[in-house]
Amino acid sequence: MEKDAQHKNDILFLKRRIKDKNSLKRLNEIMHDWVLVREKHQIIKSKNIFKIRIGNYNLFMRKSGASSSIDIYLEVFKDKHHMKLPAFQGKKDKIVVDLGANEGYYALGMKANNPQLKIISVEPAPETFQILKKNIRGNRLKDVVLINKAVSSKNGKISFEIVPEVTAIGSLNIGLQKRSWLDKKKIKKITVSSITLPELCRQLKINKIDILKIDVEGAELDILKSSRSIMKHVKKAVIEKHAPQITKGCIEFMKNNGFKLILQEKERCGDLYFVNKSPD
Picture (tube, rainbow, N blue to C red):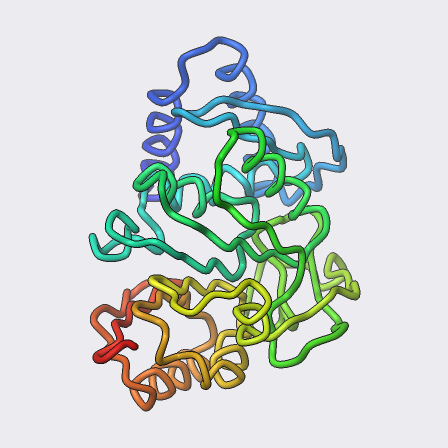
């Protein structure tokens, strides 16, 4: 009953933000597919890309993953995922580095808060990156740098796992997070370009990061450990937690590198919010 009420609230939230009939029709199609995917475990195979206008943005979605895209949109625009605290909404910041940018909803949300922000959006999965690029360029957003790479502990090429029908999932090892509903046969291995965060900052001439957002499905600690040299230049960090041991490791690392944990969300995949006690 609680899930049904939540689902109805989500639909009402979306409908209130839609002003044109074509977009409303699209939403009804997406929610129909949402039921097929979530409740009947069917796969939507069509990879056609369509546009739907929600709020002030034109959003591009691939039909096979549209129900996943809607879930992420709701997380950001309804539930304020990664930006629950006012200090993490970017209103007084200049540079945000977004690791695990997915289709760009976090970047869109942050730009709505502060159009002057410069955002570095990093996403390794090729098909997800294609939608990310459409969402940023289709809304004519300036100062959003798009990087089609994985940030990891090494530079070069690495193996990366994706679930083509679920754009929200992609990581070095999807199995790190338990998902009872996920058929392991749907996981596909691909090879992607990889870069460390220090090297990325060097190439882009970034000397200071106001907000570092990390949502990389279990690779958080590896990224942090390989970024030790630049953490003193990070003012704030928000990290989505996954496996309990990785979460514990992230908290210990951040505390040992001058950060204070100011909020740990209770949800299984909630966020850890940190502030640097003495940023450079």
